[in-house]
Every structure is written in C-alpha cells, then in structure tokens.
Image (cartoon, rainbow over all chains, first blue to last red; front, side, top):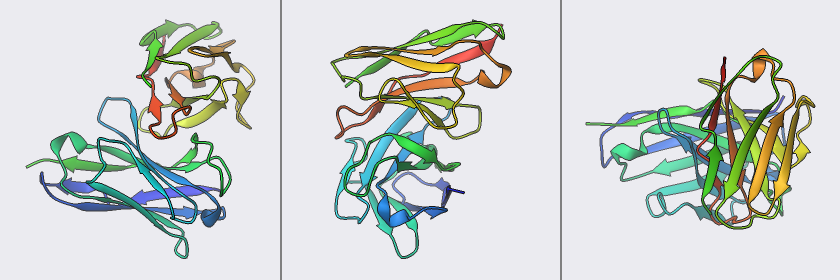
Length: 123
Length: 107
C-alpha cells in the first residue's frame, strides 16, 4: 500500500524554524517527484514546492521562496521541508503529496497525499 | 493563473445530479485536476486532464471542459460524496494553483 506519513509539526514562535518530514512507503520513492501543499485552518489548498525525483531540481511558490527549502533523502525514502523565518500566516496543515508522473516528467497533479501535520506559528 | 469555483456551497439531496464549475483566468487547455476532501482528511484525486477518471473513482463522477471553463459532475449524489471539491491547474507548472473549493452539503 502506498503511504505517506508526515511528522515534525508543532507550535513555534514567529521567526522560528521547523523541519517537516514525510516518510514514504509502498512505492519506489526515488522514481517520483514530490510536493508540499498546505491548508490554513478553514481555508483552501496552497501549493508550496516541488522536487525532482533525484533532488536535482526544486521549485517554490513566491510566498515561501527564500524561507522554505524542500529536500529529499532517497536512501531513507523521506521528503523534507525546512521552514525558516516562520510567520503567523504560515499556520496550516502541511501535506506531502506524490506527483503522479514518471521520474523524468512530472504530471503536477497529486496522488496520493499524506494525512498532514499541523504547524502553528504563534507567540 | 487564478482559479475560481462556483458555487462556494451547494445543498443537494441524495440522488441529485450535481454540477460544480471551475474557471481559469487564462487558458489551461485541459491541464486540470479535481480533488475531493472530507473534514479532517487529506484530499483525494478524482479526475485529471480535465476528464480522465482516476482508477478506483466511481463512474458517477465525471469531468469536462477545456480552455478556461470546466465542470465536475456527480450524476447521482451519494451519502459518501458530501465533501469539499477543489479544482487545480497545472498548465503553469511554475506555480500550481487551486480553486477556493465548493462544499457539497446535505439538503
């Protein structure tokens, strides 16, 4: 069974840092591009970042560019999101999601998604 | 690319035919996906490439449209279908964007 399990969320003060992890199982992790998407409480979905299957290429939404870093460890089947300079408006559930394409060409739609991890930025 | 959806909330009976609209601010050809999200759960892919049904998704779900206008149709609403539905464009792969969502409620 394909499974994505996020961890690392929690309460952090404004200006602080947090690293999220997404453990993948049930598929060949190194063959898939991966994404991070977030959802503020009661709000819609916002795409944040994408990473190539081998980690060689990354893309970010402007809202997090320069503050967040996506990375992966294919030996550990794990995706990461390093979040620095956190703001109150970064409060959200953060989802990792697998791209539905191949290792060399992403589709840029998401299937499946993890269950999400809640990040709360507050003083 | 900005995505809009209408209506924002929809009330319907079990068995009703339900239509949700999604509009893009510029042409996205057929580069559109639809997701279903239930409260407290992760989104689930229903349709990609505007009209292709994801494996395992019931055939009562269908998608149509191209260019800037798209539709998700549920032919006969079932109790399990009460959820929020999002469209997502991937024509601009440098910034993937979602619509604001349409909540389908029980009438």
